[in-house]
Image (cartoon, rainbow, N blue to C red; front, side, top):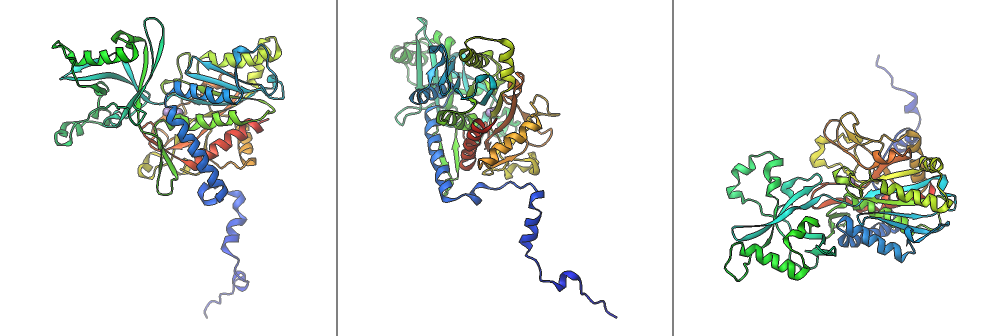
Length: 485
Ligand code: MN
Ligand code: MN
């Protein structure tokens, strides 16, 4: 006798498979692609914010330029130099330059400063080539600048691309001159050669870090001699140009801070313009939304701070890096100028009551290089701002590991305000690692969480981000400063 299939399920009408899936939705964590759920209105906002961002980063490629452009925008919005004030009141907008390479901006809240600050911290330095102190030399009738790379780069990526020179030179008489060549359409650019493939057999068999060596990152800056027939006539002609144009001599390179950066402008990528390629998304893609946030907030409840640091790419050292007391001094000044006195313990408690987002980029999952990432713990392009409870390397070495109670508070502020977020690690365990400013800020006892925009080709001369992630990072930073209690 054959078995008769009359199960209960079969005797009823079949439920919709979609309903069954929905029934258990609350149990599962799912991160969505922003483009799949965005309205036309939201897309308009995404594209408009991206245009503002591109415009800003094209004129602010270095830490100095970012700081001076940010101060210009801040002044236009009513921010004043904190040094010009004896006291501060709710709604007051102030800024403090950290030696022209870092910046702290604040909007004083309705609640007393002693309730703590809501802080956004990002860095405005990016990987680049700095000049050596004796950079100019002539070789085979061509004039070069010797460089020393700054931050973690793949050296071979910096050859055969148009480069510009940005920075300052302090002359003997202590006047400071600014140099920026290679950005305007009519400007010349500068150039590092690479070997032709026809003769590249030995070079191509080297390991990646040696394909182009550090000592070979020499930038071509000239090739016409001075009229007189003398030794080093080519080098002298360039020095003569520099003296006539800027008043500088070879010796002034010692007190110069000149940076070689890619001269490419930010560009939309893709027929649908979904991505932006640009130099130095790391970390201007977080610094800009943090800046836009502080510039746009009305009188907040808690005092909101935007902290833009330098030297992150080399470990946050120096008095303009996040480890410098100069940033903390501005917070102390805010506290002191509101209370008209300074109680050390009360001030320390104020910092303890503070909350911070360490706004820095992380890697976006790249399917071409999937093997270095754990696909279950990666951030994906266009899936929103990436929260990283911890960063670091190996056994979480060198990281701040944010407190769970704070993480859940941040996520609530994000979700209550329509922010699309995701999470992940920077690559597989033991694959590599990275650090941010969060570990240094955590020393003050404040709560701090890393979060920012996923980037592809990070630290390359031309990096890639998603416009949707940029916009939701802006929404996230706004939600954080305005809604964290
Ligand atoms: Mn960074
Ligand atoms: Mn970086």
